[in-house]
Image 1 (tube, rainbow, N blue to C red):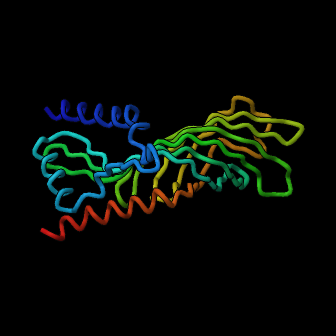
Image 2 (image 1 turned 30 degrees about the vertical axis):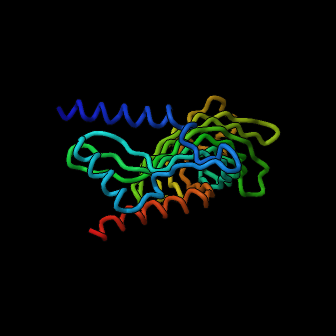
Image 3 (image 1 turned 135 degrees about the vertical axis):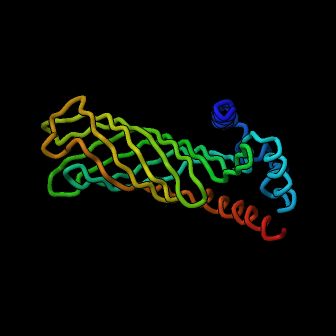
Length: 224
């Protein structure tokens, strides 16, 4: 029975992420169009919705969902210290999942990105990369994973890397470890197999919306 619930919950998460990513955006259809946002409901209505979800034992409830482009910055150590700057497409959802008597509240983010990266030394070495991350988090901390493909050159030699990564997400900052698989290894003196770093995506709109929803969530319990 527990396995069945887990499968149903996983399916609901995947369908919600990929099937409603575009339809759930917080966009106006016209200048006077109205958008219904469940997160704007009163704390009482929010609490009642959560109670119904718990009674049904299964289901994911999205309170806010939107997509936006945001700048991205980071630092990474892979023998040398590298800095990156780029842009990401953040597909974000904030809500809660009810399964049995447990309630899980948080957010998820599917994030494709492109960035340039440069070695911070007197050595002229730089390149670019493209990748994707998926973050699943509580209000405080979350787990994430992703991968990117990168190209580096110093004008005389080059390297192509495939790097899967595991991350800890702290809302605004991700701390990660990645392992570089060399598809072309002309720069192993400057780039090793292990990559450690931090990255940040600057998305004030998401942080502001998340704080509003979390405030409604906790106030619902304070009113009881």
